Image (tube, rainbow, N blue to C red; front, top):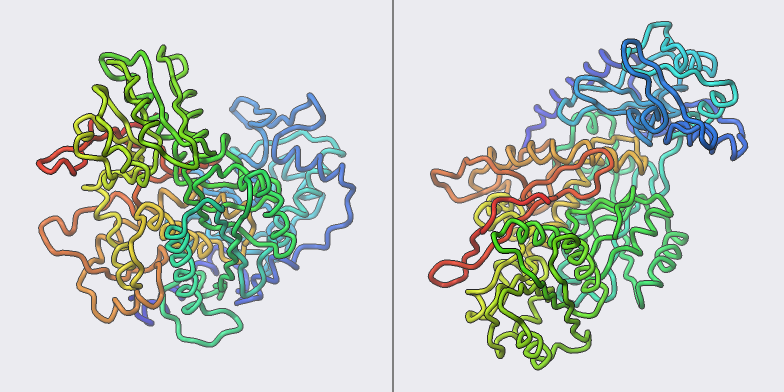
Length: 617
């Protein structure tokens, strides 16, 4: 644990950085929050069609239908349309970003129009804790129009040549400025000065043991987080390290977690979610658990512009949305892995038979494999299993029809695989879903293992052991049983990463910015976190009790975790999750994009050995 002296030094460093970068008096605690909300000039009532035009210019680079925004930069080709849109660089939230060595400043309402000393503060780069946005003279409509057209800022200085100059007419300029005056002017629903309201969603088909394990994880993490959170209304000792900027500004908030359990058929879920949201708006949906299609939940999030933060699901939506971040593409990724693996074999199969339950997850899996194999020349044949029961006679008839050279893809969960014990394996290659069958723990009968392959969307067991050490220590200290390692480690990561991201956002609690910050932070965060956890592994003592009390650590902490000593105990970890690698870029919504084809080996036939290198379809 970092000492109080270290925290004081870190806070002083931030104070000096803020004085240097912002050149303005500091606002502490709720003052920052209030400034972001109240400091900008009151926006006049603007007709909806004017705001719509401004949003279209900002986000899509469109003026009127068929007419595109054009931007000019000295010595470079002009840009137009979507390439010229302001949101490409300043992002939909207007909060800016870092592009290489270029700082793209925030241009939301509280940054453009607020007075010096009342402007919001942004940590621009998670790698550099003292890199903040710079203060400037407030803009007026006239000086902002000059900046957009001529590249001259509010202080009369030329702006970067990388910033396009736009020859906008008076109507379009007025619309764009009207949009900027309301852009990120108010924090999003579900936020007040001391609390953030969050919800998690569980769909009705999840069985009781997984549901309990999921809720125990979520509630334990939130309880531990809140127990050590210091807000403007609380007086308590801090049990964990926050970022230096967060410490100075006092922007920590407690979390209020609601559990939204859905009932009935999937076509009713979106209406249920809308009713819950009307009753109690939340800032984001966090984690979540489903064994069915997540499409209705994503549709709700798109409609309400509510972030959906890394749910644990296997059937993702058919198309990515703007507000839902997934660990991977679930069974769609497995379909792509299998299709590519088969395409690289010497003798491609003439027929692929897929076996699946006749439910929403089975339909998503079968449709995705059919799409992945389109154009391969392979005939795809479906064998549906009634969802009310899995009869060995049904499977026996299916396997009896298998011809030499066929490939079988089995989309069944681990609980269904015991049925195979009474069936003779076919003389053919059989592939099992790694996620549904529980990977290396799949209860595949011994007689089947010589023919069995696993489509494996996770990091190999031998490599991921170190990645999950901190997770397993935390599980032991909290006395939570390990019921489903992939799901529980996903929950642990999702909530840990949410803590890190909200910490970096300070008081800029805008939903679009949460998504943008995740895009910017994820790959950087994984590298920092894995190195930190590897470096700080020492024997647990009283620090183990600290870990037990507070739960997941933030990116800025250095809690030491006990691990076995040995020659490789200092080896660098690749990440902190069950997946091979997590990363996001602007607009990307799938953090893990790779996997393996593996098979069982070893004397016991229980070791998982890769047949392929890491595949990225």
